[in-house]
Image 1: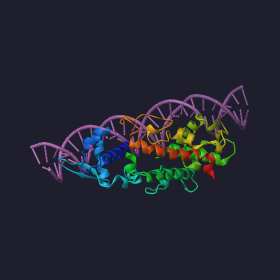
Image 2 (image 1 turned 180 degrees about the horizontal axis):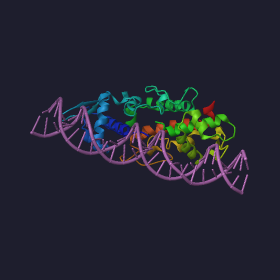
Image 3 (image 1 turned 135 degrees about the horizontal axis):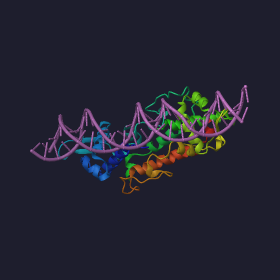
Image 4 (image 1 turned 60 degrees about the vertical axis):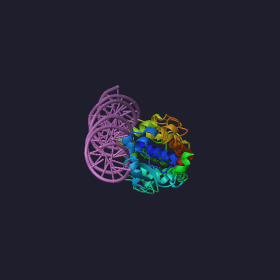
Length: 136
Length: 136
DNA sequence: GTTAAAATCTATAAAAACGATAGGGTAATT
DNA sequence: AATTACCCTATCGTTTTTATAGATTTTAAC
């Protein structure tokens, strides 16, 4: 299951991209427009800022804005920041690899074999989609 | 993330398929061979039996055995029984569809658009893999 | 047949982990 | 002084995973 964190984060990014002006947008406005708990969204936008997707401005007229062009924001990176690993099992993860406790040899593991394919197919989708693709 | 339930279930099925004899195999043997908590595995094997993948025999010399040929056990059905929906969001699920609370129109939703592609790619992998494919 | 052992079946619950949300205060900008 | 992002913490609810305790069925030995 996709976490709401990721879902909300994607929606917020999409909203910011659709506005297309570089003016900061307040958290409250995004939350209201996308039907999201404002407090929750607050923390999500914060991690998106910390990871270089968004810029922010405090005080009156402040808010969040996209730093990069939508076409340069690739889904793999967004998903990894918000959701974590793309792989469904740590032992097939490129960026979050971890060995399984129960597996003596992962090359012999049937789950490994299957999930490798699933990861690759998901990866291809995410690589072929930028934020710009999600708007149109 | 893939639940351990699914992971263990797949491993158990694989083990049974690799043995290839129709003799019942005891839970304890499977659990030991695959490093799985026996009691947990017990409940997993039960749901696999209830869903037509396994047969069982009680008493001395009893255990679990495959009902169908490994090549006839397709991953989509196994995953749906053990893990639930293949889709990462209910609004793109074929077998477990549900509308999102926060979406006025899912055809306009960027998350929907993206997750539809992810679902399709995962589905293709699962459809192209049978239990027999996982052994070799 | 009776009994004992071997195994699956059932139900519950507890523990742990995680997800989602809310509250309240701080810091920066206008 | 007002407005807004920032930060920390606590809580609630759900799901996952495992553990506990026994009931039931079958086989096999005597």
